Every structure is written in C-alpha cells, then in structure tokens.
Length: 233
Image 1 (tube, rainbow, N blue to C red):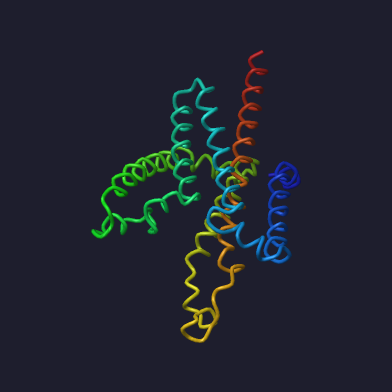
Image 2 (cartoon, helix red, strand yellow):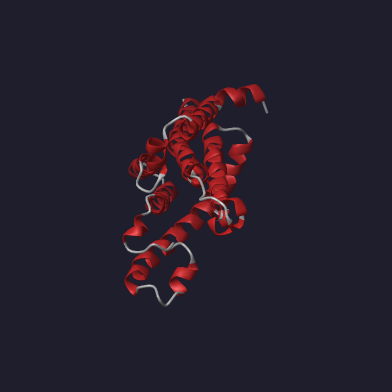
C-alpha cells in the first residue's frame, strides 16, 4: 500500500473536510446569531443544501440506471434511488406536514393514539426503504469496505459520509436536560443554539460527500472499462 499515492488520490476528500470544518467555525463563531441560527433550523439554508446534495446524488444514480446494460447494476442503482429518496424526505423533515413525531421507529406504529392515515403512508415507504437498504448492504458493503482499506477515493468519500453521519446521530441522542447547566428547572440555562444545532451542520457535512462519492465511483468505473478495452485491443 503506497501511502503517498493514497493521500494524493484522496486530496479532494481531505480538502472538502477542511473547507466544511472551517466554514462551520465561521458559521458558529463569527456570523451573527440572527443570520447563523435560522440557517441551521428546520427549512433553513443549511437544511435545504443538505437536501440538494442528497437529490444530486439520487439524480446521478438514476442516470446510471438509465445508462447501464448490466441487470444487477440497474437493480442496485434503482435501490439506491429509493434509499436516497427516503433519506431526502427524512433530512427535509417532510413528516412534519402530518405529525410532529418521528415515523422511523416502531413505537410510532404501535401507538394507537396516532392517526391511521400517516401510518398507511409511512409504513409502505419505510418497508420499501428497509428492503432496498438491506439489498445494498448485502451486495455492496464488503466490496465498499475492501475498496476503503485500499484507499480508493470513492470508498474513502463514502467513509467520510458514513462516519460524520453516525457521529451526528450519536450527538443527536444527547439529552441536554440531564445536565444541570442546561436544565432551567434546576436553575440552568436554555441549551444554546450553537450546541443544539451542531447535529444539523454535521448532517450537512456528511451529505456533501454523497455526490463526490458518486462522481468518483463513476470515474473509477470508466477507468476500469477503459483498461479492459485497451487489453482487448
């Protein structure tokens, strides 16, 4: 494994991380609250950009579906389109149009107090998402993991996306009310927006790697096909 080669090939992922990290510092520490806070809240600029990154990746996947002659690749591409559609709907908080509760957990469907219609809408969508996600996991996870440890740029970009997204969800699980400093009932203060909304920015950072990973993956495939063509000649 040539470390220098890996670093050079993954320069764009490293540069993107540093760019987004430093802009985060500017957004949270330099911009005025009246500008920075609304951008991170529901339906703010950052959330819109997150949704657009996901949609761009979805469109690339759909394009791959139309251009591929391989049946299994087309199935994988359409499965990814479905998964990204639900990912987009989740990040855009579209479920807020009919409920304030999260529809991703089984508790929502077991709660008899919740209206039936939203369950009938969300249930089949989540089931389809689960089927497509499991298919992609079974078919591509080992392939992606091996490519990641080889330092292939597209897989490293996927690694950045997955790592940042997982960290954002772990951060989102923090219950700040457990800390006396941020519990008004115990003489504390309200959780500052800079702490509360870090998760939103992390999700934005993660989503930026999706179109990058797709473009690098297509570049890798074209390189492989070009090499096969030359060998045949």
